[in-house]
Image (cartoon, rainbow, N blue to C red):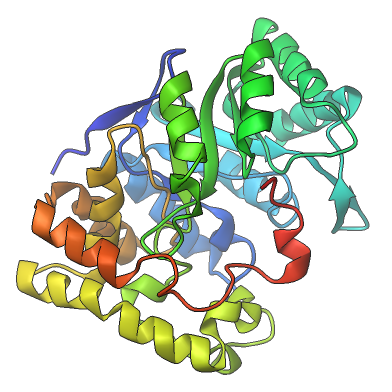
Length: 329
């Protein structure tokens, strides 16, 4: 199949209808085999999944470097999104930092690691409560005018932050966790994005793998795996969430697809302004994820999924307290 494109925002950014989250190629899950990750990146380009998501903090630094090496000779075929917003010391994230001078430093370093002269979409990774968002938007606007960045995005930002940033430098996309089992954006953020003409890039669209049905309990993952500390993978939460996610598996079986494909199809069917970025470092999973664009869910299927995984039926918070404190809402 040919993967179609979608528009993010009103400033001209067009990307593949499904993107590829690259974080897991460098951190958070079991150690990756670099050759597998590079093969996945190359296959993504071949099948039209050309919206690639990274960040300086992934690794840190190693994920951008991986993309830079993998994309040599292929840069013009892809849309690269990366992020700033953290202070990294001794190889560790030690807090937020969105001071304009720091933003400029980060962008120069990201350009070198990515082996490119421009970043297609630059996100503020997390809102920095010590720096007015107007200053952040102004700094990114300067980088856009200098040709080093093309489009501006925000990640996990609340409505007030989005509006204030957009008034200074138009925002093309907001990246936030959004999926069948995490729908906190529906009350206020998504309506604001629709009003302002901003696209949504859902990360963790498969619930960090939970919606695939191919998961284990938290304690069965190694210490280095993010899911070991995910509240929704723990104890009674795990049991309740497996039961709730059964609706995804039932529709997948009826439609001859995978649970992951149905979960992605739900997002794609929700709005033409949504572009999910499921992460994988394996070619087979990539190909299955991209095939989700071929599924059209009817109103009854959409309703069944949304009722089964409605807010209140998913058990446990999406983050622990420390990470949740960094979300701007």
